[in-house]
View 1 (cartoon, rainbow, N blue to C red):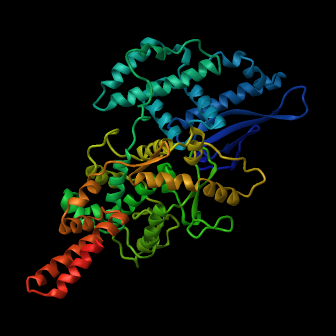
View 2 (cartoon, rainbow, N blue to C red):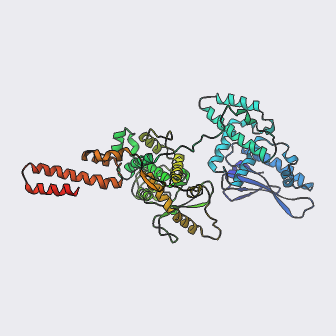
Length: 532
C-alpha cells in the first residue's frame, strides 16, 4: 500500500503504482487521486474506478490512506460479485449508508477540484487545517451523528480555550457547514445540516469585503508615497516628516512598495505578482504584439492571462531591472553567493534571503508585502471605506474603479482574470495572451489614470479632492521645493509648479538688483511677469 512519504513526494502529473491494481496520480493543486483498475465479474475489460482524492499536506494522511485501502477491499469484493461500485454509489446504494467527516471532506475537496471552485492551494490548505484543528476528534465520526448540541458545546469549549481562538472556531463552523451542505445536496447522506443551530446567533459567512476599497483621492496619495520612495528616492525625507521606521527606505522595502504599486495598477492577486518571472515580461513587445505586456497563469483558474504594461506599470519593471542588475536588495556583498543569486534571479521580485540548499541559495521570490503595507498604512491611517490597505483591498479597488468607469461585470471579470476570455483551442498560447493584453490595454490605461485622481462618470471628467493639489497654488516656492523633495508631486505638477517656483526665485533675485536702479532689470522682470 502507499505510504504518506511516497504520496507527498509524488510530483504533479506523476503516477505511483501500488498493489492489486491500485495506482495514485498527483494533481496540480496539492492533491493526489487514488484509482483501482480491476475486472468486474462477467466483463472481460478492466475498469478504472476512482477511490478518492487525498490532500498531500493533511496531518491525518496515514489514516486516510488506510481508509482508501479499506474502501479498495470493499470495492474489490463487489467487483468479484459482478457489481460495479461506481453504479452502486451513483444510485444511492449501501455505499452511502455511512460516511465519516474525513471521508466527506475528501469527497468535497475532490468536487472543488472537478468544478474549479474553491480549489486554490491556499484555500484547500486553510480549509483542511481549520477543520482538522477544530474537529480533529470528529474526523472518523459518522457525519449523521453530529448533532446541534455537539456543535454548541464544541463552539463554547473551543472559543473559550484561549484568546484569539473564537475567530478560528467560527471559521471552522463555516467550513463545516459547507462540507455538510455538500453531503446533503450532492450525496444525499444527510437530511438536515446541524449548523442551522447558529442561525440568528452567529454569522457563518466570511467577512464581507464588497464595500471595502480605496477612493481615487486615496489611491492618488498612495501612489504619491510609493513614488516618493521608489522614483524620487526621497525616503529619508518621508521618514523624518512622518516619523517612519528607519529602515522604511531599504532596497527591500522599496521593492515591496513597487510590488504593491503593481498590485494596484494591475488588479492581480498577490500570489500572481509574487511569482512573476522575467521570462513572462515583454517590455519591448513580442512577435505577436508591438506593445509591452506580461503574462501570468491565473492562480485559481489556471488559465493563461495577458496584462498590458501601462506607462505607470513600466516604472515598476524599470526599477526592478535596476534592482536585479545593480541594487543589492538584501544589503549583501554582490560577490557573495546570495548577492549573485539576487542579480541572477529569474523572478521580478526576488527574495533577498533565499533558502540554502547544499550551501547554495535556491532562487525564490519574495514571500509577502507585510513590511511595505505597514509603512503605507502608517502614511494613510484614516481611510474612508476600509480599516487598512491590504492586497485584496487593492484588487477590489481595481474592480470598483473599473465599474465606476462604466465597464460591465463580464468585462471586469475578464480583466481581473476571474474567467477565461476565449477558447484557446487551435490558438497558440503566446498569440492568445498577447492579443488579449492588447484588447484590454485601453481599460487598464483608463483605470490607472483614474487612480491618479481622475474619474470618468457619465462621460464627464472630474477631479477628485486632493489636499496636496488644492494647496499648491497658495504655497511659497520653498514649500513647493520641500514637497518635491518628498517626492509627492506628479509629473504634471512638477512641470507647472516647479517651473513657476524657479521663475519666482529668479524674479526675487532680480528685484534685489532692481533696488540698485537697473533699468535693464526692470524691463526683464516685466517680460517675465508677462510670460507668467
